[in-house]
Image 1 (spheres, rainbow, N blue to C red):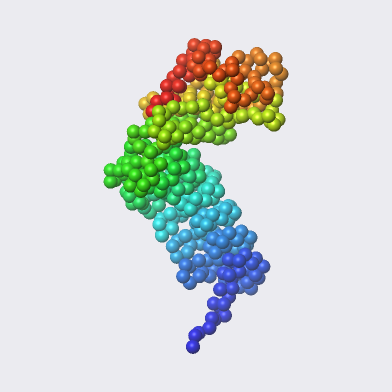
Image 2: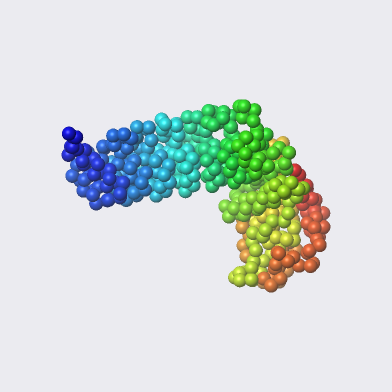
Length: 440
């Protein structure tokens, strides 16, 4: 005959079922009756009630358990914390609550030697990733380890969170990690093929979005893994032909997030978004040319500050450099405005080159002053007289502004010829920028 459950075993099952289902009153009543129940763990995984609540996103139950237990870093059989399980399952509210309770983001498990940051990146939970990175900036981690070291923390196989995100096709996480200082060309230890970079792993997974992101942040297409393979060869082996076309060393280099912008002391987050969007669109133009096997040229980008007929704004300013885009970026120390496309032209390059790009601070093409801060250009409510006094800010009204149908007065003008009106020095700057944009 089978042996029935003991009273103790029955209580354990009832507790874990109540925690999993979010039955707050039941959990509280059982904890009041026997506080020792909260220290129990499941037989197989050695999971505590905190682990079960975190993995299932039961935030109210989790909060009650944290108040009663006081230890957010209780471990299961694989040395995994509740924070790791919450990050693994994408339970954002539980991740936030555990961090508030003092959960240690630096603990490693014994299964793969990973932290909560690795798990958030691996499973593609970008909101959890942001919370953990934010915690790393405001906890003793920043003083003891340093934020950059934490972002590039390696698991037991030598993989950083960026490696895992790239291999699993998590483009949002790849972007967040790169923006936070992840090393784009770091090599793995034993993860996948030894010596693989994030670009090798993105090529292996066939993620075009990850490949785009990594190339835009300066990933080297010619870097080899321990077997001597470049990312192009990995993409070809796994029959990811579109990725291979972009990774082909014979194809034009992608435009790279401008290293000169690192000299700008304050890059407004909203302005950064506009510049990143412009860079993505510029690279997509190049991609299209590569995939169509035609000559690669950079076409004018879509307008990022377009004013349509229903806009509340009464007027917009057109960029005096290209005469095609609306001014969306302002150099705050001098007040001159340009479109995102032309700002990138001042700073962008086809391939990172420390000898030519690390020491040159970008300057405003209108006044030749150093660019110290970039912000999003604000809509102007000034009088027509004040706007008319500015030679670098021609006004364009809602009725006449149509990027799809350029006005006849601008239609035949090239960027270089139109710059002649701005002075010789400005024309020289943009001529140099055009050369950079057209390099391949």
